[in-house]
Figure (tube, rainbow, N blue to C red):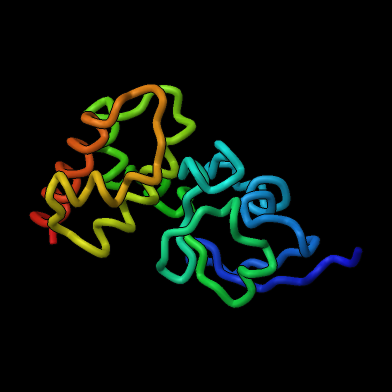
Length: 159
């Protein structure tokens, strides 16, 4: 099977790669591009650990083919925060101890960022509904939701 050339943008940077037509975006990110922040939890789109944005829309990268990234803008956990410091969302997850083993954390942070870009002032119910596709076996969800709502408030005050 011949590989397909894909030109895309990941976290605002132009990227080119070759992939087999059946490779998932998750496989390409982790195995070909060495961007291991995005995690594989279930491989079937049920857990949200592999959440990324594609053209501003939240998707499970295990359900997207790498070839579908052609011409798209992909956002991953590596694009949140910088070498100079953490993003407010990351800071609030730490502050509220909204993480333990870390498998779900990148997907939750990417999903939280997508939520707050769409709705900067979510209610608790809206935050819980939006993040319902992200499963966490360690923390329970109260600390996560508190971190999300605190991050939303901090981001609104800073805007």
